[in-house]
Image 1 (cartoon, rainbow, N blue to C red):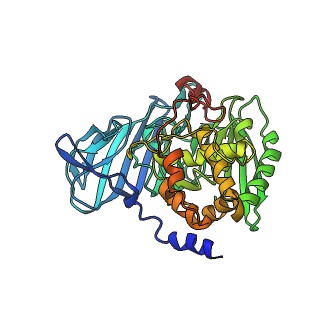
Image 2 (cartoon, rainbow, N blue to C red):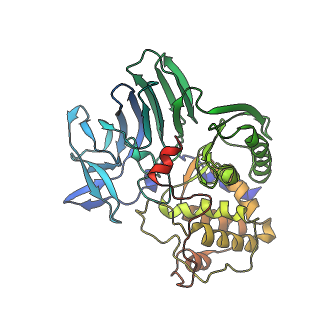
Image 3 (spheres, rainbow, N blue to C red):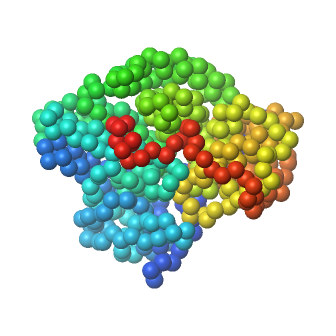
Length: 447
């Protein structure tokens, strides 16, 4: 009982996340500062006549100190205003070499409002004959700048904030579109919609996909959670497949995961079946996935998009946990490697190390052995998830709670296997069967 009280005690004030940001840094002769997004409103418009996709954004953010605010947006920013005054948006690099965006005007401590516009060209396809559009906010985590910043201005992984997406289909009187999302969807006119995403979402959590009406096969059913809550489930597939085959798998995976880690923590579950062998990608309570990767991606709604990593250095943990499950929750006296620097990258790193699947699962198998006298690693993970669901955590946070739970000092263990020197004999990263790297063409085919 004492262990879980500690978990819950630490979870107070979980959304004050600016302390999880990397250190501010000097670059180009100015002080670049990380900020706290309070809300983001994105007005997304699809012009089905002229085949143009644009976004107008309103970002409310808080700056703790004076400096030049940084955020990210891959497309070029236009017509930017800061607190009502015109401002330019530049590009700079973090100390790790990652490209990011900067407001080229300093701010003082306090609340500020940034408005700007951009075009979207990634993962959007127009059909001029039917005057319809296929578009999605696909994300990936093994390469930087592949989260929401591909489409709209956004903050970094440490931050959680309310996001509202309004969608308009221009050039038509009535939109004949289906919209699939893990946010709260409302139709506001014959050609427009609003999606409100939960306030605890991070930059990798939202799911959005729109297709011409009826293009995808859809199945809806309910799952009753172990806590009695009814979870609405939506499965949709392309013409070549039936969503019905997903249903029994989803129900079985729900039962397994809830038995191991507790009640499903999301309002619903949404699954889009993609081509066999293409793997999948997780969102919060949603996934685009092949059938073979479904269980892996559903587990990520617990670890990755339930308890969420604060940065690239923490990203190895959720892939390690999911891969540990994929390989049957093995327990090992020692990991099958002598040391690594898996979690030792720059604090500015923004992507997950591809070695996480193999080295990470080996490390989890070793932790399970070390924790066997207190119920094993799964017992720890269940309590950790219950205490920290919908929050952002670091790898240090995970280690500290692991030590309190077990009474074991894991400093030497981490210094060897996670924060040590990489053994050149370690297996080279390979393309993982679950999170495969897809080409731009393959991502377009998913639309």
